[in-house]
Length: 501
Image (cartoon, rainbow, N blue to C red; front, side, top):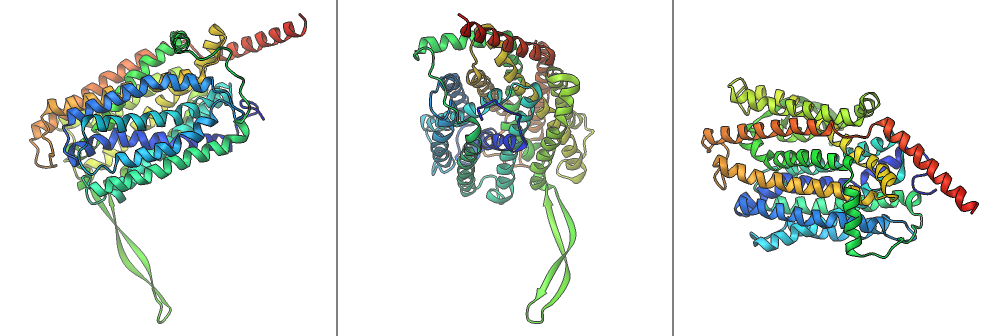
C-alpha cells in the first residue's frame, strides 16, 4: 500500500505519533532544564547561556528549511522520509548524552556547538516525520487525528522525562550534577529508540520508491522554491501567529523552574495519605495489614497534571474542530489558555492568593494550570494541523507538493521564536535582579514580585496578539475540500490528455 492510500487506522496513528517523543524530550530539556543546569549547576552567566541557546536555534532554524527541502527531493527505494529517520537517531542520542555530562562549565563555542548538533539532528528526525502527515492523508479531520497523536506522544515523552527528573534523577536537588548526567543518558536511549520504532512501524505503509527530482539540486534553486512556497498568505499567517506563540512558550518553559522554586514554592508542598500495606511473615506464612503513609509532593504531581490535560485535549479536540473548524478553535483556545495561566499571577499581585508553598495555594494553582494547558495545547495542535492544509493550497498555485519544506519552515519559526523567548528570559531575570546561584527563601520579595508580574504581563499581551493573527487564516474546511476536488479534477484532465495526445 502506498503512502497516503487507505484510511488512517489507530495503530498507524499511534506508531506515527511515537516518533515525536524524541522532540518532546529535547524540547523539555532545552526549554526547562538547560538554562538552569548551565547557570546554577555549572556556574555560567545566564545571559551568555541565553545567547548561546538563541544562536543555536537560529543556526538550526536556517538548516531546517534545507532539511525539509532535501527530504522532499530524497530519491530512494524506501521513499523520501525513511532514510532520514533511520540515519539520524543514533548520532542524536550520542550528542544528547554528551550535553548533559559536561564535567566543567563549557566555553561559549563548545556549548554552542553541542546545542547546534543536537538541534540539527532532532530536525533530521522530526521534519521528515511530521512531513508524513499530509502524505499519509489529505482528509481535513484525519490530519488532526495524526497531529493529536503526535502532540500526545510529544508531550508524553517530555513530561515523562520531566517526571523522572523531578522524582528520580533530581529528586534530592535540582542542582545535582550526577542527576543531570543520568537524565541525559535516559533521554538518549528513549529518543533513539522511539524514532527507530516509529520508522519501522510505518515502513510497510511509506516505503514506496520515490521519483527522482525533476531538476538537479542547486542552492539557488532551493532558496527560490522555498521563497515561493513561504510567500503563501496562509503560511505567512501561521508563521506570524506561531512566532508569537512559540516566543511566549519559550519564555514560559525556560522560566518555569524559576517560577516553581521562587514564586510558587512548589517543593514545599506535600500531602500525606494513610494507606495499608501488605506484610508477609514468611516463617509463619502469616499475612497482615500494617498502616503506611504515602508522601505525594507537588513536584511529583505536577507532570501528571499536565499530562492529564493533554489527554483531555486529545479526547476533545476532534469535536471542537468538527463544530468550529481549526482556525476558530486555535484563536479562541489560545486566548482562553492564557487567561487561566496568568490568573494566579495577577491574583497574587493583588494579595488575593493563598500563601505560596501550601496546599491552599498549590491545589487551585494546579487546577488552573490543568485548564490552561488543555486549551493551550488545543491551539498548538490546531495550528500544526493547519500547516498540512497549506500544502494543497500551495500545490494549486505552484504545481509542487512541498510537505517537508512547509513543516521545516514551521519548525524554523518555532525554533527562532523559542530562542527569542529563552533570550528574553535571561533578560527578564537580569531585569528583576535575581542573583546567580540564588536560593529559594533567600531572595528579596520585591525581586520575585517584579519577575512574576513582568512575566504575566508579557504572556497576556502575546495571547491577545496570537488570537488576532490566527483569525486571518484563510483556509476553512469548505475551502480545503473544494481545493482537493479541483486538484483531483485537474489530475484526471492531465491523465486524459496524456492518454489521448
